[in-house]
Image (cartoon, rainbow, N blue to C red; front, side, top):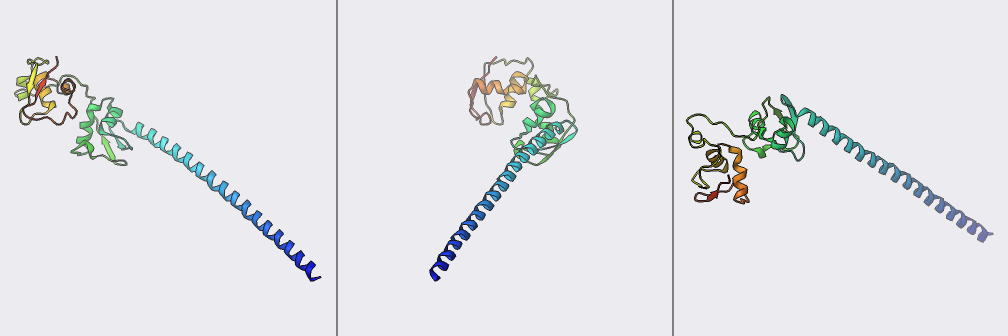
Length: 192
């Protein structure tokens, strides 16, 4: 009889172990489903929240308001959003006491000032300034220009075209890789 009791106990033991494993597997599946569904909802909620913030940021980037810098923003892109012209980036920089356009970072709050949109046309210069004295026609009188100490493409465009924004024409015509890097003695062709 001892042998029968031992076999019965062994059989019950296998059944208990099997049921225990079954309970562990079922609990594991339930926990897995709970956490994966919760994670999916969190990702969807985060996406929805990010879209909502982006929409609010776009709406709040109006002149006379405050704007929160988003990832990937530049002063130029904020200016385009606010004024429909990137050239107003300098107004935003002045209103926020920024000395460099690279001073913004995600989450920073910027004041968007009231200003008229700037369009890339010929600029007016104060009477008596060196730029006003040399730039009167809006087109260069020479076909080339030799860089002197203190020159920048901006200054050269102001002097030769009476349009400071024409610096891009000079950079493109001379195939400049880095328009910020020019040296005294460089000779640039001036497209007409």
